[in-house]
Length: 427
Image (cartoon, rainbow, N blue to C red; front, side, top):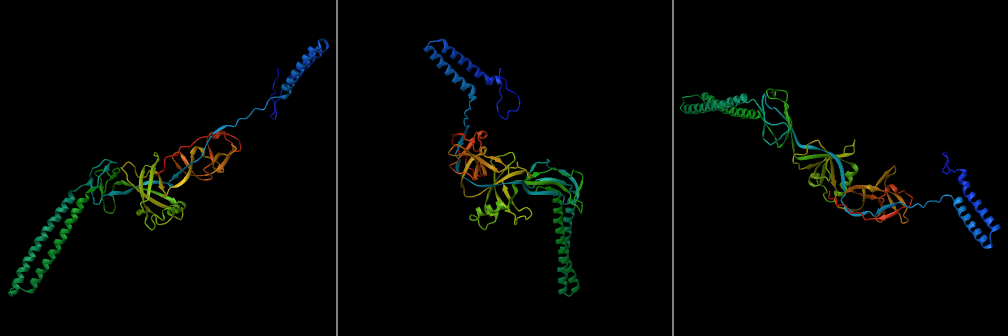
């Protein structure tokens, strides 16, 4: 039995001496048979046996000395396709966060004990809805006092006018002096001033009484109450925060744009809205939450900072979006700003793009079915395909399936297919 030795062979197969000698043993037997036929058989038999022996000998020599045959290598099969050429809308993507359009901290504007809380923590409230009530007895009494003072000043004014008229008549009859007339004129004017002051006190008393009812300044969502009923609020010299309320519709989204993208955006929009502020250009923008796709929320840009921050090289932008109250302030969002004027671009499946230390690349097949590594610069995503901005031609055959079997510089068996264009990117 032949055996294979288990020691380093440097890639060569090592067999036993018995395996090597076996063909030669058969050759010796055949030669002996041929020699015997030459000595004892007829001429025809000797010729036939000699021919048969030589044929078997040649076959054994070929089997014994030829060794193992080299296997035929079949090129691996891969699927190739030409890139899709399609009009696409360029866009810029950013990271941002949502911010309430209005956010107000409700405070007590008059001093008193908190009487009631009229809302459920975290609920939606309407504009002018009563949220807190501060004890009103003191301020109602002050209003009543101010109203009474107005009545007193009116009476004083009437009396001063009556006396002035009387003494003015007596002065004409030389029955009164000019000093007495001047005195009652002074009293009349003082009463008029007192009446005006008393009426102002009524206004202030009504205003303070209204401050005992803390109302919602706009429609929005209110947080939890920060002070419980029974506590003294509005003490002089300090502001007592009662709760915070945010307006959620519409909703702001703030994000920053770097200098390169800013210049690109300004160049593309320079002809369409030159000289107009951002808020007047009606530039559309979209956003999606972390668990959303397709940027379903549409709004517009309404603000841009007046200068680029020198420390970061970025400019702050803001978009305003309608909101049904479900999106809260402070959420992380992805923002997309589309650019005008669609352009023609080449698209390939995203799975066909690979990465290494040199960057992004595609595997293409040339006219000789040899795999070639092609460095490319990928753009944005359209559906499940990627835009290729540089490094690819429309007529190139790109390997889209069987990438694991394709090695740059090796031959493959390409099977051609046609890619399905993705839906147009309207955002």
